[in-house]
Image 1: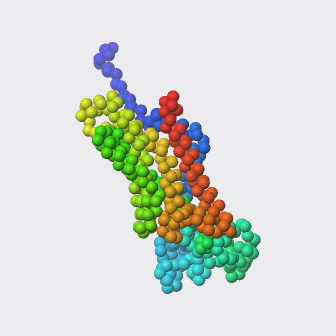
Image 2 (image 1 turned 45 degrees about the horizontal axis):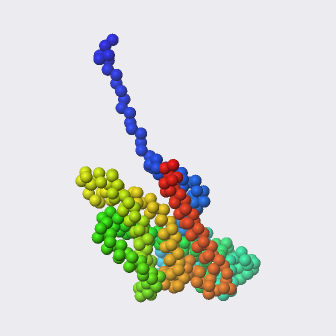
Image 3 (image 1 turned 90 degrees about the horizontal axis):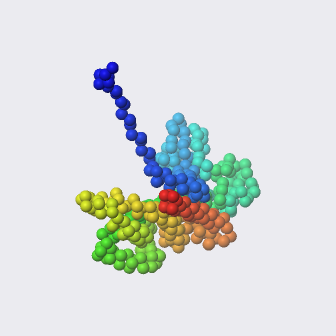
Length: 382
């Protein structure tokens, strides 16, 4: 039979789908997992950070959800005026016995595990603040501040202070949860903004060289030689305290650390053959810098990020300790350390702040070591 009369029909083979990670990045991820301490530190840090993002559902002086006269309410998300429950104030105090009895008589409430926010004052402490954690006191001592003592229905686990109170009768554990969130968010935002500015400046210096590199390098040398901490203290004392004000002040100096690393990578790679070939083909400088040189420079930058993050958190804690950080009343680990120094008779304040800072910074350092191993070319390309 003639083969031309019966042509063979072939089905086109689809090319294999590309994975989310390149083979090189897969090897880097395996190297990261091989460092067990850093790998589990990453998961533990992520769990703590995600939990702190939902701090209002863990520690709050408002119920998570309530039912009143057949209407489902979400006090944790919405501010309901007190007149809704028969009162007259603009903001409802759900810890008030009058409001609590009114809601419970006409519905129910579901409270978070800790019934205090970072600014809530416990008016039922057994003695003057600061008070010790409830598990260091007897049942009679921990309920002594309630009208009916041990038999009082409000003397429950959620109303007790798990890590004690500070010198203003505020719950220590609630302030640690909220303070952890502020510290990590502040450090992340500062690190990302510093990386954007520092990587851009280092890329421009290293790629163009010449007078551009010379002038910018002299400026950076002068800028980095200034006494950073003293300047931060002076500016923070002149400007009103706030999250973004403090972020802007620290951003003035924190970006310098990235410039040297990126500049060195661009100076090394700008004369490689593939860069010269791209120039010969008419590719513009921005494309060469962004698509060809920056991925190589980011290897060293990513290794540097966890250590910059831990440094940013430490600087914020130092400023809070000195009284030049976040506004008064804000949840801050530095402010808690200062309280521990002032109230030596209450060791739980200093110990809580110490362990919170130690665990946070240790996890970041372990993660940084694992990232350094992951991007080590001797392990990635062996």
